Image (cartoon, rainbow, N blue to C red; front, side, top):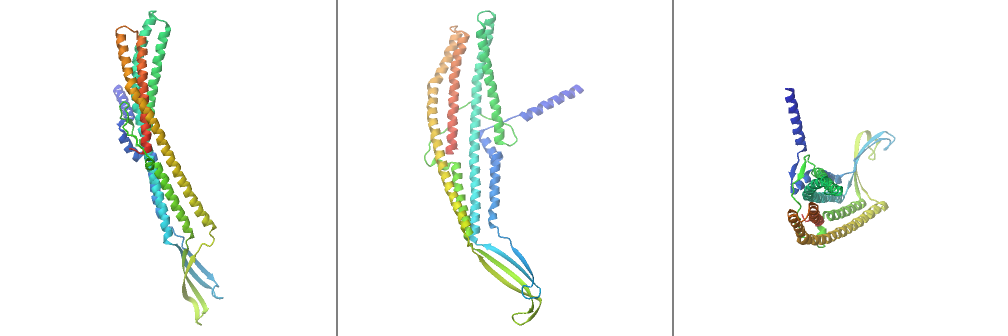
Length: 410
């Protein structure tokens, strides 16, 4: 009975470990969709929008209401009391300019969220591409590994029979070790990508990219001077200009007058101006209206000037960002053109050559025209061509992903 319980516990632990380590296949489009709601950076950007929205109504902040009292001989030698309340009001256009500035801040936060979404999409594109490249590369390495396994076995037998020296056996074993190390690195790189995918999606689940062997991404490369205007980074720079303009208008409102309204209520004891005698229980009320005019404007003018300088800074940043995006698009287009040409050459010439080398070497080895070492070396040449072909495909896809991002062609 104890043995049975022990086995049940072991089975339960194995099942739990399997469930905790289980990974759900996920497509690129699904990963993009889930990340928009769960990615930590995007969550932060979304909360920043909420924060900016909550700040909009802070534009309607009034000066504190002033409540005062007077006690003593302020009307005559008798003790009198007085109470007053006053409030300062700014002109409606001041509130309007503040609201406009706060709303521009909201739009800026939204632009940053859009830019972050585009960046996360680019990272996911790279991740899924790299995972498919590793799968294809792993397939080639496993084929090489199978060749060297046979080579090692045959070299060992030949060495034991005295048909060859130890150099052939050692070389075969070293090549096998190199392939094993490369396969181990591929496996670790896949694990690395899975950890990064888990972070980008961030929904508490474990996923594995649902991809096959690497293929060329579909994309028609086209761009002009207007293409750069679509990029989220340009939208952010343009929005920051609008914020700077709105802040300049807010600074200018400091030149607007302030309306002061107050009410005072006082007592009088003794003979008043109307020759009536008052005992202090009688109360007299008056209304005060005043205008606050900023006579000393040096500081205000300096604030306005600095805000205008900030507009210039943001305009320059926009020009720099446009030039930067346009330059990067041209650079990536040059890389795309050259890599595409090399890829086509490999596809049309080198890849058929690799297939020919494989086929002919296989036939020659089967017919006894070449030995196993020569067969392995020839096959490795073919595999090297196929490996470079995969690398070119990977580089071409990387360039396409960069162009997707730079031209926002999703």
